[in-house]
Image 1: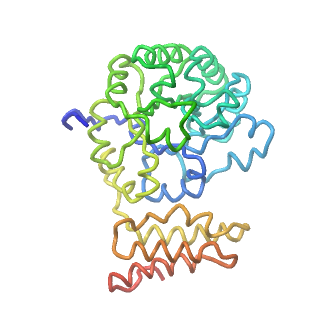
Image 2: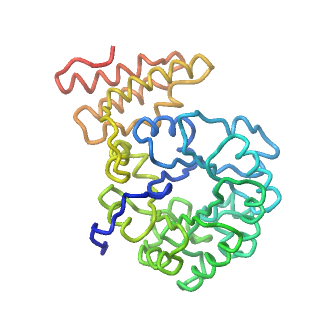
Amino acid sequence: MNLAPLDRVNLTEPSPWRFCTAPCMDWTDRHCRHFWRQLTQRSRLYTEMVTTGALLHGDVDRHLDYGSAEHPLALQLGGANPQDLAQCAKLAAARHYDEVNLNCGCPSDRVQNGRFGACLMAEPELVRDCVAAMREAVEIPVTVKQRIGIDHQESFDELCDFVGIVAEGGCNVFIVHARKAWLEGLSPKQNREIPPLNYAWVYALKKQFPHLTIVLNGGIQSLDECEAHLTEVDGVMLGRAAYQTPWLLSSVDSRLFGAKDPAISREAVIAELSEYVDAYLKNGGRLNHVTRHILGLFHQQPGGRLFRRALSEQAHLSDADSGVLLAALAEVTQRHGKESVVE
């Protein structure tokens, strides 16, 4: 991968989309986002995709409730009907989300059957109309998350055509997963790994549309890579790397936003999460709903395997409480030969 030098990075007025966490189905629920917010205050967080049908015909509170500390927070919507999307955007704005994002990149069978997600890459005029309807309905930003193409789309010109047409609807921010999506023949997991990454097209897209905010997504594993990509685009988005190695988020504010926030520790994060867990359990929750998101907190640290094992073996039990979390931390601190800093 041929990345540019870092001397073009400008932190004077960083874009609100400079660093984002990806919307990931079954991962980025409110517990995951609460955990991530302990590590980074500046990152833009995204919900799991919520379909318009789920909001218009289901439990709105369950899908849209979140903690006030999660801001800045974007709601990702799945749908293809402009009026439905506009109505759902209004629900998001009423609950003070900072952004509504339209999913034009998910290749699962579910979204294909509903003619939304990555299927929309073949219908830029419809996406333009969806964006325009949402923009008319709300004042918060309306953005699009997409692929560089699907199936038969083989040229950079087709990618530019899509972005140009959608921008006519009032979209100024495009989050681009730098892989094509194959709607037939590959599973969603394979679509995240098999189609080759093409960062050059996303870089070129920024040059083609300098007035738009272009955010790069796909395959980014470290903050070193983020810094390099940020010499070419306005922002970066991480999904799997943030989830599997979450401690990297603890350096985002200082390295990518130039913040001088106080240093944090993993022990302090666990202490805060234990209070969060206690409150959640009082409302009928279960410990593993929270702890499943933090298994990678001590990734590649002494005692990390013991931490994961303790949570995996105990957190799912019906009577599990924050004591299980603190005991898992004790496994780590004992591995270091130190007493736990958490009472």
